[in-house]
Length: 165
Image: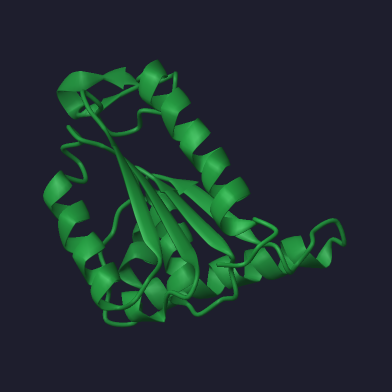
């Protein structure tokens, strides 16, 4: 938490760091820079969304139990990429109401988005080393598997399909 707090306090700084990381990855010569998708988990989900909010040319964004809040410097209206949200219905850290508000805002801003909600699923459901239901975080093998399948299909069928939508 101590390391991410400065970036939460200054989301423009976070976006700059994310763009620098993407530029470095693309400069390594191994990536097809015309086919870029990003994904993140929890805070990383917020990072993936903030990279999309920075008007960076991305084909797709996947947020696994990410945080959705905008900041004055980072707006959903700047998202140009397709978005997939994978979320636990019982997540107390990022409650369903936050997802509903966010999805409504994405729709209002013309973003191509979709979500998959997993029942009986808390925050951090992809991480097998986490099991603290009282804190609202717990691995859920079934939801993790379903989320990975959904992410793979999103990349294959929506983001990198031969035929552009």
